[in-house]
Length: 213
Image (cartoon, rainbow, N blue to C red; front, side, top):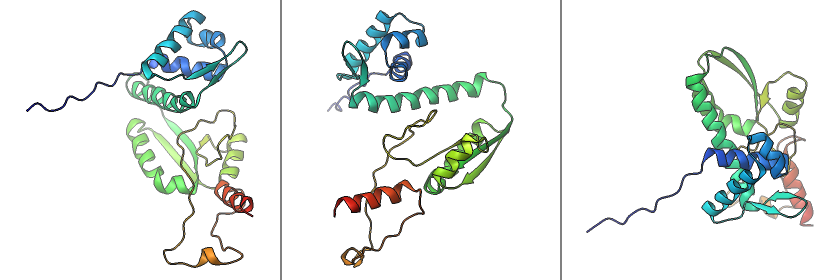
């Protein structure tokens, strides 16, 4: 008896992803064409090839503007990550050894769950770079990047957050949690365990409760 064949999944060409990112960042096919060193018609052909490959539209177009569809926005996040991984992999082999110190900010939740693995992988690819990690609140770390006290930072932010140079790395849903068998949800006022002022989780939770009044 023959084992069932696994359908072949096509590969996304990195050049197509570069064009997707360029269009999203410039807002037009013609401006993106300059960025990726192609003609506008070649960019249009790349978009058509990408949409044919996915079977979905990634851009909504009219005579005056170009915008991402929900599928396009989803693909954009993955495109940026795939291009970054490609750069990192090549840098490991073609760039000279990098030395120095990187000052990195990390919020509490990311420090606990993601920082150890991040630092381990970075140490393997950049053994001559020292990372000084600071764990603090998002608002303070954004300000520290702006005034030059940090080189870069991970932050926790609301959907739609707009900061020059910021890139979405992941999305997570917020959920309400309580002790099994607890009675906190029955109390009025409702007791909450939240972070300090400035925490987006705190803000989202309080706004959610206010909206239910």
